[in-house]
Image (cartoon, rainbow, N blue to C red; front, side):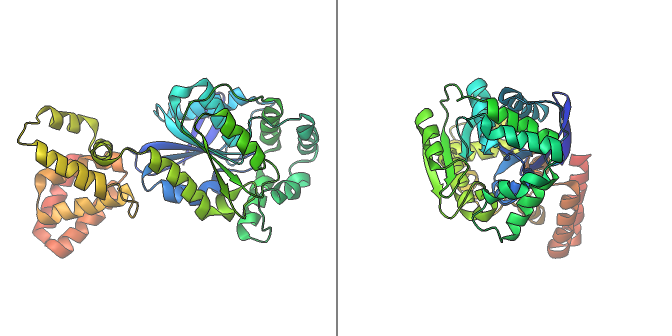
Amino acid sequence: MSFLRINGAVLHVEEAGPPGGVPVLLIHSLGAATAMWAPQIALLSRTHRVIAMDLPGHGLSEARPGEYSMAGLAADALGVLDALGIAAAHVAGVSIGGRIAMEMAATAPGRVLSLMLCDTALDFQPPSRWAGRIEAVLKDGMAPIVDAVVANWAVDQTLASTAGLRAMVGRTNPLGYAGCAAALRDCAAPGHIHLPTTVICGEQDPSTPPARSEEIVAHIPGATLVLIEGAAHIPNLERADAMNRALMAHLTALAPKGPEAGMAVRRAVLGDAHVDRSEANMTEVDLPFRELILEGVWGRVWTRPGLSRHQRSLITLTMLAALGLDEEFRLHVRATANTGVTREEVAEAMLHVASYAGIPRGNHALKIVKEMLG
């Protein structure tokens, strides 16, 4: 969890996954918060660096007074990426989050790797749709609109997750809600977008029905549509498995394959400096071995979804220490800066090495750890 001052407001940001992973930015719907992405964060963070942001006045983010614009909200999202040192990210958004993602792609296409647009639309006309809601929340707070909003969000209103969504809406700052609603009221269809795009929509979404998703597909060349059965406007929780499958299918289709995938993971884990040195020293004698590790180890084992990159890093450290492979062990201790393994976790792993591979070997490995991390 972190708090970033972006364009004059303090915004709450959650991060998960390996620091060296390919970034994925998640943007929630109007009246919700990062918690709506919990099932997706748990899955995506196994292989990607996941960033989930609370919009102004939502979740734990500070509200700005006045009305917001779609361009301003896109600037907030880009500001989060800037603050985290991220040049470009895959962007997924639900409802207003999806429209913000499109704004980012239209105005700063170099910052967006691809789009995953869920239950959203090119525009949210007519303006009268928002006037009563803005007036109500500014006058009486969120309570008068909670039931009406969540009625569109889930098919099954008895689910515990639906109660959670209701709580999210109720806790939203009315200033933030009204400001974002004004951005939806005033936005028009975004400019040209030429990025890999998957459009996802709940088949029973009454707010932005499948026909609105089909408009997005027609607007973005090459975009594909995925319909989620038994889902309304917010499928993240009610149909989490289907939502997860759609997101992972999109990201997997865009991921490098074979040796290219192996090289991408190798660089993400070991760092560009090490890989560049290794590549510079490459000879014809090394090439068969390089192909073996790129395709067989980095490309097939490290890319499997069964364990997170963080978990694979910790297992690798323990194995190398137990086997007494000092050079490789040093390399992977250094790589913890990219995999997110903490000093405390390395220390715990060395206790297992000492317990199962012997005290001398564990002690020797711990000395290397202290030297490398010191």
